[in-house]
Image 1 (cartoon, rainbow, N blue to C red):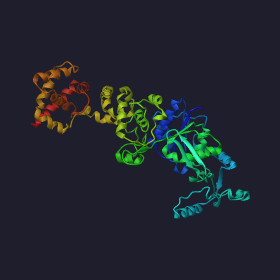
Image 2 (cartoon, rainbow, N blue to C red):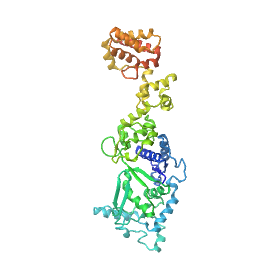
Image 3 (cartoon, rainbow, N blue to C red):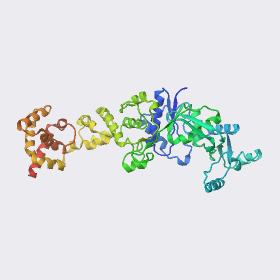
Image 4 (cartoon, rainbow, N blue to C red):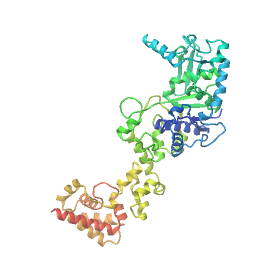
Length: 494
């Protein structure tokens, strides 16, 4: 059987990173098995539909490098790929279940169901509409054929007829065998009164007709697995393989990761920005590969010590045996560290193609842009960090007060006078380090003090990239001007 895997989100808002991880694992599984990765939009619940969501999902997948082989925007031979456009298909298939006796029409109004639910709760029971009470309700099992024709003009739903006393056993590739007694299930609604299918029914029909070989989704869908198996059985269809991924957990405490956690702790939970209040990983300065690399490690391990992966390496190394059962705790610092590794390994030329990088460098001389990126990229955890890292290029002041207080007793003005003299008399800055080291040794000046004085003059603090690379970027004239200003600054303090 050919490998066909789908990602099937609902267009109810921005795509959570949990959804992107499901898409990623589906994509990697398809690629590893030389199969097809398709996107299906599950928009049967029109009340929850949010304008722009589908376009957002497509853009997010494309940014992450997970472009579907088939889907609403990509086409394919198994469409339509929006469930709202498959209404006639569902109608035809629901008729098959009605005819073979595995589903039935139910005409019960909301008041009657609420009353039954209330009575069950009063007894301390959970209300279920099923084998134990279906014959006492208003449905096609309890009305005559003559009455049924008239009843069909009323609002009605279609329910799955769950037979009691059965053991439903389904195998999950990650969690093993899952078994449930059918008496614990109610007769799930398959078709709503508006003629639209429920998630359970549409999901199964579409997976069958689109020839999905493996369903990969989050563990929150595990309780639905027995129902889906019963629907496959009702049609006489063979079910696909199933894999239910572990939850992505909050950074601390219990429960799965939510937007509220991101808002509270200041990190994104969406791949792309959804609105002004909901920044995405992209807008937060992540490379798509840094983002994807981190998501891959949330619940999966290659079985080696390797943590840095390209997308090609992930495709080659991905194996479902490495997917864990337990929840994976979200760690934004780890995500930034991985992004840092990918930024460091990306050429300055490629980084310069990112609009956010060009924007941050826009006030500086274009001649030094690439040189600056090359110098600073290993200091960036996100692309947005560049703005802070180039502050010294514009101006080193105001100086770090703590550093000024630390150096003041060390006669920094005199030290910088000597450094300035060396630079003035040197033909270029290429061998400046050797010249200054020799001078400091000759004058018995601590090399650390000399370097700190020069760094303060050029950068305004003690952190930053290589000091002599800074000198080359600033050039001899600017370097001398900054040293002269710092000498004047310290002289005024004494």
